[in-house]
Amino acid sequence: MLESETATKNEHAYETESKTPSPPSGVQLTDQTNLLPFKQVVTVFMALSLCVVVSALDSVIVATALSTVASAFHAGSIISWVPSAYLMTSTAFQPLYGRFSDIFGRKSAMCIAMSLYMAGNLIAGFSKSIIQIIVFRGVAGAGGGGIIGMMQIIISDIITLRERGKYQGIIGGVVAMGYTVGPVIGGVLAEKVGWKWCFWVTLPVALTATVVVVLVLPLKPVQGDMRKKLLVVDYLGAILTLVACTLIMLPLIWGGITFPWVSAIVLAPLCSGFLVVLIFCLWEWKGARLPIVPMYIFKHQTVSGVYISMFVNGFVFFSSLYYIPQFFQVALGYSPIHAGLFLIPLLIGQMSSSWIAGMTISRTGRYRAIVYSGFGVLAIACGCISTFKETTAKATMVVLMLLAGVGSGMTMQTTTVAVQAAVARKDMSVVTAFRNFIRMLGGAFSLSIASTLVNNAMKSTMLSLGLSSSAINSIVDDPTILARPGALSLSSESAALILTQGYTIGFRNLFFLDASLAVLATVVSFTMIKHKELLRGDEEKLKQEGLDALKARKAKHDLEKGGKNFGKDVEGHPQKLVEGEARE
Image (cartoon, rainbow, N blue to C red; front, side):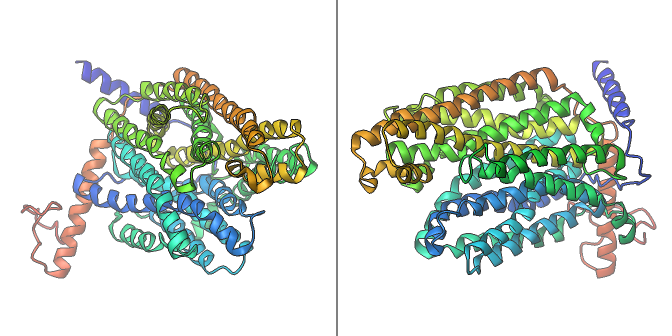
């Protein structure tokens, strides 16, 4: 009786969601849901995992090789633009892939993302100047930004909502694994082979993944001819998205590093960017035929709660990914590769908890408590990490970073399930893509604000010591030089003072901010993210439709080829064909 009541409530909930108003465009999008049997899911999932490995490896491999690239082109002053260009374009293109995949199809969108990524990295490896590398890393970012988002959307098409958490959790583990081994691969390539291979090493895997996706992804074709599809694209919305992201992210990259925060060259584009965001929202609300980001999705309290929480997740994760290794280099004098190894506890914690959280969702159908508990754990871990000093025991550091990884992993894929469960199926791709965009935007704000906090703390200490402007700029540009005070004719006492009263205080302030934001995300996720049953009333019907489509396709293939498998089902077992089935 209880199960019956639950099912009734569940069907009623999704019936209510389906009444969410559509954009006044008259455009009918093809439902690309194609629930597959387990055997086919495994094949497709392996192909998608290859794509994700490529995306995860890329950023950390290239980051490890930046010093080598800077030396090759004598471009230390602008080398930060290499990762910044990738981050900027990958963030800006995130929300576009969701709607474009609705119009042109998931497989087409994924192949475009992979092609842009491969083309950008291939040409970057042949670059003759640092400017060329920056430009083509931007091209690679335009593709790389869509890879993980498209993977999540495709998984949502082929796997039921309740089972989704298990697979999303595994993907979270794959991403963490890529972040773990990437620095080692990048360091070896940069030192032993050459910086070009840091751009090229992922290309064979990317090409293989693209071919496999084309061959094994049995998604429904999107109806309508190309002319009709091109007519419904929200071109103005796409342009406004790219312009707004560029205007906001450029000053975030410049602020406090290249130019002062209060300078016109930082404030003018930043304010203009927020104005363009307002124009974008008005256009999407009132003008677009088929909006890239329909404004009505924000009426769902859970959707808004997830977006606020994921901004915090991105902020905390990216600040940890960058500043924890830097702490080990600056405070303890470790090499970049040695310092990068201390990220392994954080990433192992994230990988493990992401997988366990996904399995828990699939078994219980519950996700809300995992989300706010994860942010609570993350808040505690960041608060403790803010107390790190050069005298802190290594074992303590490892345990706290492991704890931070556990908290982060609990919030990663669970929020994907939460946001997808909150909306009707037709909005699933849009809310997923925008979730990823918000997380990347949080990361962009994080790196900018973090550098300001750390640099200001160091500058204050250095000014009190009467250091010259050139010495101050050298230390701000490369804080690791504090481990070699003789390089700037600094006394050991001055270097120690800058470290303890400058850098360490800036590091403490950053992770205290991370802890405060994680507390905010805990409250937001507890109060705004609502539980939805993860069983949709039409899923059994869609499962059968997917199985029937596979049977019909296999029967047609066997009949055309005259193969020995004719008369066997999709699992390879003998089956009885209804008269006329094969001919269909």
